[in-house]
Image (tube, rainbow over all chains, first blue to last red; front, side, top):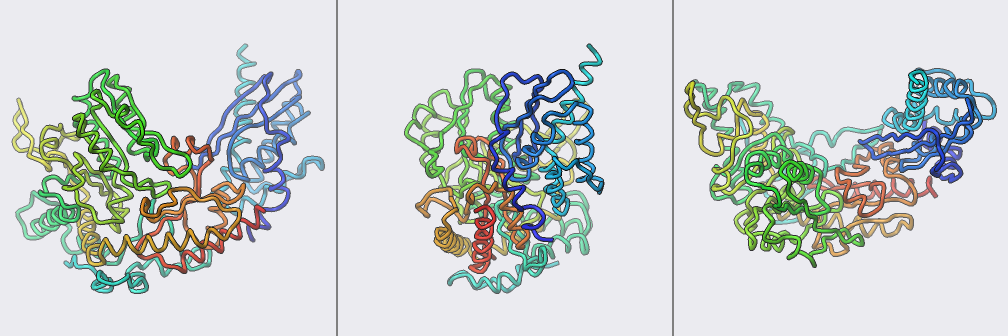
Length: 149
Length: 423
């Protein structure tokens, strides 16, 4: 176990630096903010829906490499998915980090497995979960709001 | 029981610190972290404790155990005496005329809150102004913000100059004016170690009749302090940042103001006479210390003061200045490093705040941790400061008497590793 093998590998650093999904979506249908006050990580997520499908998903914010890389991977892996598929991916991702779940991500989103090494650094798990918890809550809230409507 | 300091550091006052002997006094420095010899550079958050302080605290529990100021038996009287002696020691340490000016609280934060609840709430009126600086720790900012909201007062800020994190005093006469009732300012920034010209700010505050509050949490532990010449109305600081136990803070105050202040906690131990109709409080400082205090902590604090005086505050200050100069010199050889704070070292204490390339401070902290080095990363309870600089935080190495050049070398080597990973 070493930091270079577990965390600071190319996939994570590339996703940390990627600007591809790092923007506001002015016409977003869903928008939510999440923060880890102890470290100052702060992300905003934007989702544009087309019926039941996530047509676009972006993020903005400040955070460490783990936080931003995981947010970028989130955008990459949820874009084009149905809400049910998205919830499944979120569940798997959280299981991977919190429950020792062995990830079985589809080939095109297998980059998510790169985050598994964070598990060896317990204080950083919250960084890897910030965007994912935010999107989970956001989808749950919107589903709840839909039910009430 | 013994409250004398360990012998190792005594006699070091006249010469440069004998750091290797001092290190022997701090048992935790023998530990490893992540398999590496422990390098502790998070003194701005809290300091390590010498064996003498640990012994004093444990000694109270193993040899006395009694509550204070109430028992007539020997152990209670001894405990009371040690508690009271600690107050005398603290008063002597900061040059207070009278130990009654020293109130024990649980933290510097509580000390600020005691001023807010005991003095400010009944004295601040709508339209009054409170002046703080942009570089304050939340402990000396949020209580004043809450007070302003509650009383309809206006909060004003002495702005920070982003270049070196120093204060811009050019508008001081407008910022502190005839409406200003409180001026609260830090004596040393917990982010950069910057030491603002507090005397100048206090002089202006006195000229308009405002009360003055100095946050000494980072300052009192690192330099010789004389409250008489500082001429502040209040000074707050905490024991744990100066080799003492956690859970003990100090509020130093001018007698007249302390006497005029209301207690914040009511109950036992702070009362002179209790009748069903009316209660008469004790005099200062007892009226502020309701309930059983942190007896062991205060006694340990007394021992910490002995220890620091044995080493010598001027020698400690000079040692930290040397370490800072060395750290800055070594850091300058790393291209990717950006350091914060005044370039004039006379304006700062032993803190090196920095960022490395596009590595977030938390990434830097994780890599340093793996190398056995403890630093603080993030926003340092100074969000307005970071917003003013437009950065997501910093990594902060802060020095104390037991740090040495090897600690700096280990830090710099690890920072190089950060720079390589994030190249």
